[in-house]
Image (cartoon, rainbow, N blue to C red):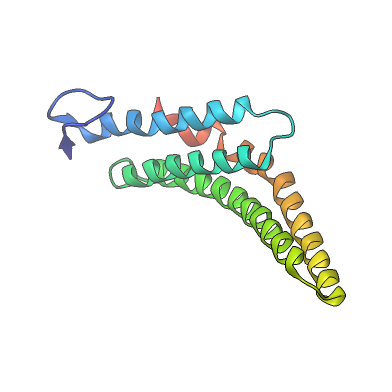
Length: 150
């Protein structure tokens, strides 16, 4: 297929296979730059921002898979893994916040203790995903997955 790309490509009639890598490369570079800029212990909000960038990169790769094929599909799956682990981390953080709000409104000691235990479980969940995300990122960012972006 051929098309006239709106961003980052040549003129009308440029083969899609030539234009699409550039359109995926842009969100990939934003994501890689954001990960590189993270401090050693990133804030939860920073990890959530990286998740959003991984989602953008994944969608761009998925959109190009019909033309690029297995290389784009494999890259998209790697980005989905990053998105998933960071999404699970975000879910645990949000749930902890919700539980804290609910706990502040309870008048029962039994309910307060139960909410405290649930908060503890969410912290364990968040910590597990925080610990796992760098390994997932290392696999996903391997140049072998993105050689087609050059």
